[in-house]
Image 1 (cartoon, rainbow, N blue to C red):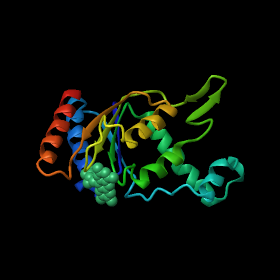
Image 2 (cartoon, rainbow, N blue to C red):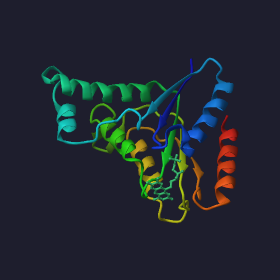
Image 3 (cartoon, rainbow, N blue to C red):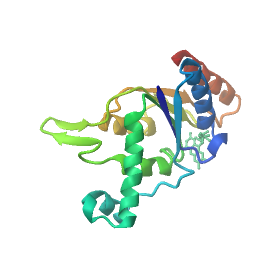
Length: 198
Ligand SMILES: Cc1cc2nc3c(=O)[nH]c(=O)nc-3n(C[C@H](O)[C@H](O)[C@H](O)COP(=O)(O)O)c2cc1C
């Protein structure tokens, strides 16, 4: 059975533009995969722990020495990684807040960046340990950044995904969402791009 993982990170929940684009994506994906399974990981709803000394210590403590609290942190990380590995395709909402990714997405990245589990270093440099698969990034922004040399967000997301092995990402931009009439045409264009995928 085909599996699609939806990683959701809008602070506006289902009302977020990236969530709405994802709904459209999922609808079309399910038409193509009627028996398919969609797993939703809402990073805002579930309060992902931020990287601090407690999280870092939990991740670096040997399994048989972890406290119950540390086990819970590692179990969450393991679950996220298992989901990424099991998915056939991934669709990620990537809203821009203050020029970057939502803080919950950064916390998620910090929780899944694990040496020996999702990446390793070799003499040739880092190697990602998650098998590559299509990843669709729904980049929603109030302003315009694409190809203007000051988008630090999508390059960061792609750098991170490449690092853990997910090197096949396609970006669906919906820009200018705070720029009057441009919003509507930008979302329509993003939906056209989504329609062309499946
Ligand atoms: C707190 C906050 C910060 C934002 N910062 C930016 C920004 O730096 N650049 C930008 O183009 N838009 C910015 N926006 C506009 C969002 O990118 C826009 O609302 C987009 O739709 C967010 O995606 P979402 O609807 O999926 O949550 C910001 C919005 C909020 C609420």
